[in-house]
Length: 186
Image (cartoon, rainbow, N blue to C red):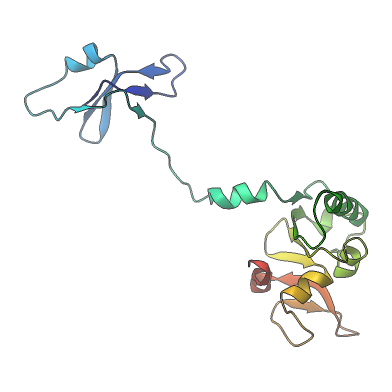
């Protein structure tokens, strides 16, 4: 039994209450101190809240709340319809931040782009030679980075699993897959 509190019920018909009765693992009553007190028996444990607030339980359904918060600060490319639009978004972000600061984005999908191909480091380098850039695919399993990001993450021409290379030249395209996308976490 919880008495003398401020109970936020999340029920629009009774948004606040003073007390809660609990039997086993179930809430059996929510209301005023007077009405809930009528349910007190000999063995009832009573906790006086002294005006403290009680909130409904919060359940983490494995959504990584802090990660989601970070995503909200990233460049949103979900609606990009071309690589030119991605470049335009990148150009706008560069105007808002200091030279050398990381730019992180998310949400692009080559199937939605007019070019029907993934952007490459060359597409990003043209607009951001000084700021390292990491743009995650909507799947989260692929990203494209610019040359500055490759340099800072020490991704060289050697064989790195998941680092895509041009089949003709052997040059890094800036597209990284699976575990290689984690090279930029630091």
